[in-house]
Amino acid sequence: MNRKFLIFFLGLILLFSFILRFYKVNEIPPSLNWDEVSIAYNAYSILKTGKDEWGQFFPVHFKAYGEYKLPVQVYGSIPGITIFGLNELGVRITPVVYGTLTVLIMFFLGQVLFRNNLVGLLSSFLLAISPWHIQLTRASYESSFALFWVILGTWLLIKGFEDRKWFIWSMIPFAASVFTYNSARIFTPLFLMAVAIIYRHHLIKVKRTVLISMIVFTILILPLTPFLFGGERSARYKLVSITDDPGLIPRIEERRNNSILPSPLTRLIHNRITYVSFYFTRNYLAHFTPDFLFINGAPHKQHHVQGMGQLYWFQAPFLFLGFFLLFKKKNEFRWLIMSWILLIYIPVSVTNDSIPHALRSAIATPVYQLLTAFGIYQAYLLIKNKKMLWQFLLWGIVVTIGLWQFISYLINYYTIYPKNYSRDWQYGYKQVLEYIRVHKDEYDEIVFTRHFGEPHMFTLFYLNYDPAKYQTDPNLVRFETYDWVRVLRFDKYYFPDLGDRETQFADIVRDNPGEKLLFIGREGDFPKEMPRLLSIDFLNGDNAFDVVEVR
Image (cartoon, rainbow, N blue to C red; front, side, top):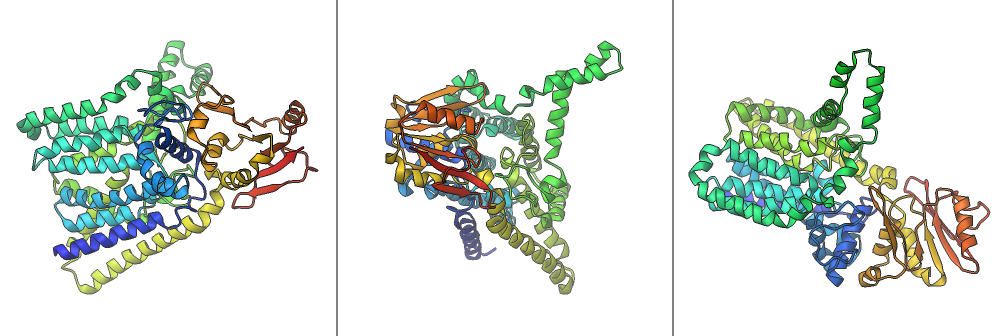
């Protein structure tokens, strides 16, 4: 392909990619979720004080809600917040930028894997329009940033087969992926080990460079070492692991009790090892089903537009053709590509929630686009000598179906999805806190239900609360449960669990005689006869928050 045309088409793809990720990013998804405001506020805190919300100076792990977030997404959010402020655009401009850059690097990766510019362009374009990738680069997700580093690292690694210095340079983005998302902490070392085994005959010839690369990677990830052997290592894992599922042991005991087999045989069949193996296998295979890939996609509402697959189903025949010809033509990187897709589902398969999981398996996204692009190119080669009418008919059908699916996705994403799933995005906090910002000085205490999750962090974020003041607040009360951190109060803000509804409300009023109180809760948290100062509904019309006052 002519170089000028190549640059022109790549430029168009990048522009289109940026528009798809940037257009209405302040409004869709319909609200920042609790992870986004946590990442953003900790970035803001670092920017203003050099410390996170817990007062830790430039930490390697951010304790946050007790799950210990990795640092790259937090530090990477600082430039956007510096330029645009602590708001939706300041938070989401970071994934928009690295999402677009991922599309650019995807071109170079496809080009070098298949030695073909057209495959590189097709790979880049498919990632640009991918509903999987768009969803995870219009909100502040650590997984999509880890994907950026993995693609960059893999591209540089492959370049290293021709110029060994790139082996060393590739270790930097690979190490960055380990500091970005928990799945990458497992995937990246396994992937590098697989590459070392697959290409051992080549790598033995450049063993000095390989040794230097290993040393560089090890040195770069050394700051994580203390956390690998501490409680932080397992904090997040304990929340989602199949081995820590509270229902696991009772299920084993139930099956043992119901078994008619002799006791030794029952214990051999029904035990922790067999059950964990079963759930791991089930979770792993769930990510290869047509339902996940082409029909319904992931069940988690934040991670995927519901009612369609992670991939467009027009990709299916080309994906299978690409996979078949990858091996038939003995592509030199076929086992690298297969290692990528087979290893990425290992970390997600040891978890117990929302399986199959689009977020934790996001690093798989480029493999499907690469194989689809290769399949399209090979289909072009297979029919290019056929009659023009047949070529026009085939590609006309493909383009028509693809365009129809893409337009249907955009309509769903911009009109249907926000309305149906605003609750899942914690919609309503911004609207309530805009009211609180104006009226907070009128009240002695502001009581905010924690029913929808982490109101303290939304309060800090939307009020642009001074991080230094928060870190040293004498009224700050927080406590840790087995799986989370709860902030009960800070300043004049109180965050109880209004589980007893009106009873809890009456107790708070009784315990604060003579004070003017502002309550933010759900419909039913307060007596019906109390006038509402403000009511906020989800975008589907259901009640989100009611605001009342007690003098």
